[in-house]
Amino acid sequence: MRKGIIPLLFAVTGAFIALFVYTKYFNAPQVVTVKESQPVQYASLPAVPGDLPDLSYAAENSVHAVVHIMVSQKTDYYSSNPFYEWFFGYRGDENQKEPQIQGSGSGVIISADGYIVTNNHVIEDADEITVILDDRREFKGKLVGTDPLTDIALLKIEEKELPFLRFGNSDDLKLGQWVLAVGNPFNLTSTVTAGIVSAKSRNIGINPNKMGIEAFIQTDAAVNPGNSGGALVNTQGELVGINTAIASRTGSYSGYSFAIPVNIVKKVVADLTEFGEVQRALMGVEISDVTADIAEKYKLDKVEGVFVGNVTDGGAKDAGIKANDVIMSIDGVKVNSSAELQEQVGKHRPGDVIKVEVKRDNKRKQFNVTLRNKQGDTGIVKKEGNGIFGAELEAISDKEKYSLRIRNGLKVVSLEDGKFKDAGVKKGFIITDVNKRPVYEVKDIKYIINNATGGILIEGIYPDGELAYYVFGVK
Image: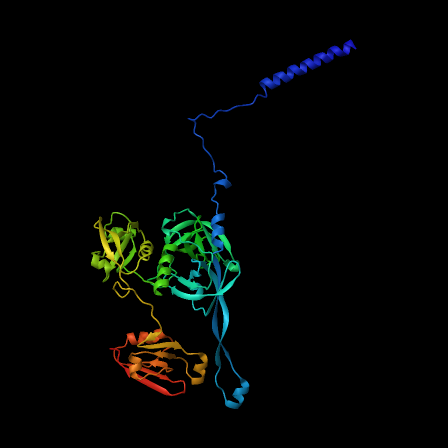
């Protein structure tokens, strides 16, 4: 037994010695101290959820104020009655109208009593407008007014205490700032997407009118067909734009979406509400962006500002601005493109005075410009109704066209003192031609009369089939 214990003691003692040596010299923890003077370089760090903005308030605040808009238009279709034609002869195809759904979009409630902003192209040519709220209630939408030059339309529904969005300030938007797009893409109602502001005052050339205002907010928030007229909101849940267009080769979102700045929207809405017509303010200048070629040709010290190619009769000319000047700012807001200048001027009405800083011979000058309307004065432009020379006109029905065997015409529905009444025209008379030209809308008559050099010949028919004509002068 003694022989077995002694080797065991040696073995245990050796094991303890080996363990002590290994622990002390071979398995010691390594400690590295980084001094403040030593630069520390980091690779890309993973995103930390806590550093991202919380968009839940903005989403909840806006989704209930964005509506779904369905539009329908009565389209022509033709029918015939073979039995009738067998006995009475061929009468031609009968023109009738049948309502059909044409499209849909989005809109934004901007007041508790039911005013709604959307795009003009959403409701253009619509015969019926249906507004569907976020809670699925449906209302008939009344068109208050439109402005094709900014692609804005104003609707009204008869309801109170509605959720609505408050206007923000689109001028305060910064590149890289988070925004939300709220709308109904592909009829997926109450959809919210997020992105950042990618650019401001972007002109993408979608408005064919030369007086059209394009100063879009570009974002990378996903916008698709059906989003048109929906809300672009900031992180505080304020309305900063109306989503309008996308840049895509497929017709679906591919990374670029565009919204009308809310500062333009506010002005258009105020004009439509107060006057029924947008009060377009003009400086009286023909402008273009300053390019490297222009800077070299006119010996400009920098490529900046907006180049004045020509000055027409109006506020700018009266104030002293000349051709070849470079406009640097409007009311202290720097402008570096035609779109930025149009955006700033578009917020004003005729008669407003703006401060314009220009660069002439590479020296800065300040001018006070009184803006004019399209007629060249500072008055308010009133909405044109369907009246002319004391007569109120309206389009005739297809039934009346068929019964009178005419293709076009405008009926006199009321008469007041004026040239029509003086010439002998009576209520119910249907005007078919003016100066031997067929008329289909009131604007056709106004155009012919405004461009006439002599007398006016009005031809038409009364409901009993009596043909008549009237002649009068326009002076």
